Image (cartoon, rainbow, N blue to C red; front, side, top):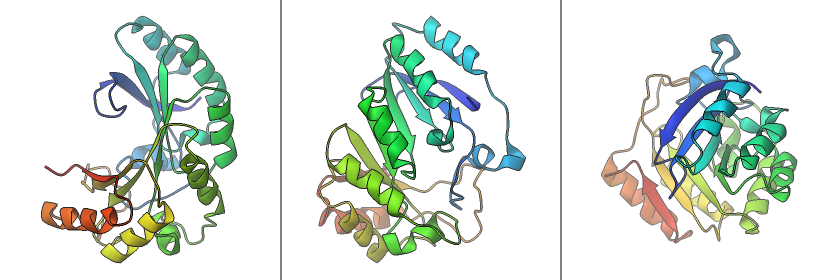
Length: 232
């Protein structure tokens, strides 16, 4: 499996658990606000730990870590992911998967095999603005729709999340996105931050905290469970 990074401990990425995060390389989206550009662009691909190195690390941390987050990039692009998760599960870890939702059949197969305990799925924007927000000229969001609908069925704990970016999002587009996921149990509006490794930062910026709170109020009228991340 193509592993491009390992964060050895996080208290933030898996709610309620002490976890590590495994970053896979490669993505089928080109979101201009992506803060992991080196994981997305083939020409900037970097090699990280080998699969066996990561598994040895996880074996050595049993009893110290509770969970493993699989992030990216887009992890569901990795053909070896299922086997990797089987080996992680055999060590007793709980597993959270981050995904853009574009591979619903792979997502469902992992959940039904019992290899994932929680899913975090990005909601890029309103359906009409999805392609532009994902950095693509054309995008059939039918696959994303299937992943979204599957999670809304409630067969596994999940969260939806939107990184809110000035230049891409408006109150109207966020309201449309909220309508698209109406009934969601967890939805987070994340404040955009320039990590220094943004894919295409020109023209993008962060909404101030007070505007983020106003946007949250708009979204909560549709998805009452919505909350903010990255805002003090």
